[in-house]
Image (cartoon, rainbow, N blue to C red; front, top):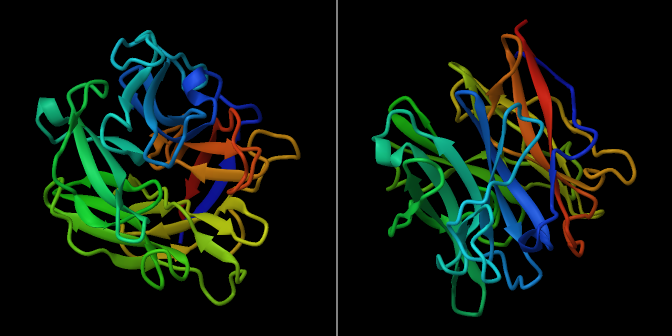
Length: 324
C-alpha cells in the first residue's frame, strides 16, 4: 500500500459563506483547473430553506486556487437581480442536492461538463427519497438537466461520478438496513453511459474496531492516476455529531482498503472554520510535484445538526503519495 501525507492545510477559509443566498450555509465544493483557471462549483442555501432540495449551485474562479472571485453571470435571478454567481436554483429545477461537477474530456462539446445530483422525491408517509439525476453543459455555466434518473435509488449525500476510460463510476450512499435504517455506508455502480446505472453494490462499511457510533457520510471518491484511487469518507460520529474524514485506497476503483482506523484530516483548532465538521470534496488537482494532489473541502464551526447561519468555508490541503 502507498503511504500518504497531508501538508499545506488551509488555516483560514479560501471562500466562505457571505452572500445573501449563502446566509444559511455553503457546502459541497467541486474544483477543476482548466488551463490556467481554477473553477469551483459549490452549493448554497439561504434562510428560506425548507429542505435540502432548496439548494443553489454557484460558481467561483481563481487564478491560483487560493484567491477566489464570484463572477456576475446574469444566469439566475435572486431577490430581483441577476448580478450574481448562481448557475441553478434547486426550487426552479424541481429539487437538487449533493452536487458534484466533473469534466468529461471524451464527451461531445455540448456535454463536456457533467453534473450529478440528487432530488428529494416524496414518498407515502411524507419522507423524501433522494434519487440520482444528472445534467450536461458545454462550459460549466449553462446547464441542461437530464429528464430521466441516472440511478433510481436513494443517495442522500454528495453523490460522486467521474469518467474513467470507457465507463462512468458512480459512488452513492446506502444504508445498511435499507433506506434510513441502520448505518450510512458507501455503494458503487458503473455504466458505459452517463445513465442507466445498475443496482449499486456496497464497497465500504464501518467495521468492528471502529467506534460503534461512526458511520460513513460522503465518499469523496477520486482517481489520482492509473491504478490508484482514494476516498476520504467522512466519519459521522453520532454521539457528538462531528464529521471527520478517514482515508481508503484502491487499485481498481471498486475494492477499497482503509488506511488505518485513525481520522485522516483532524478537525481544526477551537474556533477555526473547520473545527466541528469536515467534508472532503471529490476530485484531485495535480500539485507542484509528481504524486502530489490538491484536495478541497468544506469546513464548519457547527456540528452535523447545528443551526447554520452563514455556515461553511472552503479549505484545501496537499496530499503526497509515496510508493513503498
